[in-house]
Amino acid sequence: MTPETVTRLRAEAPACRDVLHFNNAGASLMPEPVFQTMTRYLDDERRMGGYEAGAQNQLVLDRFYAAFARLIGAEPGEIAYQESATRAWDMVLYGLRWQAGDEVIIHVSDYVSNTLALMQMAERRGIVISQCPSDAHGQMDVAALAAMIGARTRLVSVSHIPTQGGIVQPVAEIGRVARAAGVPFLLDACQSLGQVVVNVDEIGCDFLTGTGRKFLRGPRGTGVLYVRNAAMDLMDPPFVDGHSAAVDGDRIKWQPGARRFEAFEQNYAGKAGLAAAVDYALRLGMADIEARLVGLAAELRHGLKGLAGVTVHDQGLRQGGIVTFSKDGIASGALSARLHGQGINTSVSRAHWAPLDFAARGLPDMVRASVHAYNSEDEVARFVAAIAAA
Ligand SMILES: Cc1ncc(COP(=O)(O)O)c(C=O)c1O
Image (cartoon, rainbow, N blue to C red; front, side, top):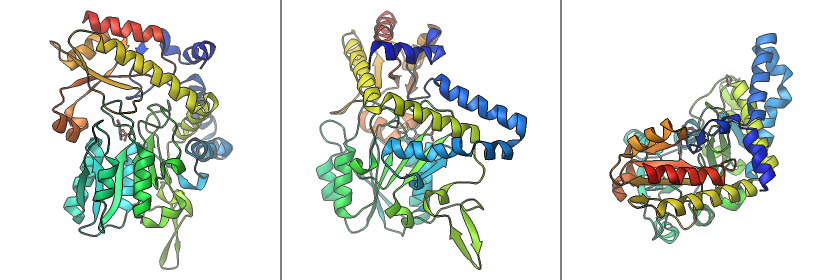
């Protein structure tokens, strides 16, 4: 990415003038074209009425499906609008046709909401949750996964990039093992969409879930679900309405494709905004975005590791844009609050959000500094200096 492009990216995220935003894993800064799309849409609703604005903007809204299809190498009919990554993920978990004793294989790095939903399904339906061990780099041990998959394994589920660290899971290898065994693969791409190149065929996942507000830089309250055509009928959608299905005599006739997982009522301005955010990323090029933010994060880790009393906790053979660390003598919550007072945005990773991993690794609360392509080398240096001084 050229310096000119970075300058433009920063100009298109006006908050860069006022804050140093290293909280892209929480919610990123919305680029101007996304904001403009949403405010234009809301203005249409205000002037015309909601249904009339929807009809007028049909092409803008339909772009949601085509844009995501291009982003992840899918077909538009395999994409569904969702209100969050969690609801998209739930759609798969609660939609699969489970029988008592069916096994799902997960990894210790899982997000809390996924863990909770699995626990609920274990209580309600008797599914069995098995944890694949980690390899020496802290990532899912692919050889162990191959050995674990058995006759009752119905799902392999992993977060591409977990909430609590820089690790990028070896998802293509995981996908190959799952496919060879004929077991569906659910990928939580909540942190990876917009951060790294994601292609569902290269990964071999059957289901993928994501959110709008993080590295995609879309609005809050938006998300996406991908269901591979070949996997569509593995699920019985847990909810139904007049958008996802129709009454056909005494039968439910589901919409073709992933539309059957949507609700009639949607955040239309948000949907248009998220489509604009995906288009923004596509125009820049995901490979360029990934290369830039991975480089910035490596620089940040290097700077932090050079500071006395600072421990960087990130694992992984391959690492992305999320950097987690703690500093001796100051609680991470207090450190993040102090940074906020200096105009530096971070978040705090706590055991609550990734309970399995925090327990297994005995992790303390960690400051999470997550960079994006629009961040600058100067900001990295300023951040490291602020941690040194804290
Ligand atoms: C890895 C991962 N999965 C899922 C989620 C949930 O996303 P949402 O809040 O959009 O439901 C998060 C949120 O931080 C996450 O980091």
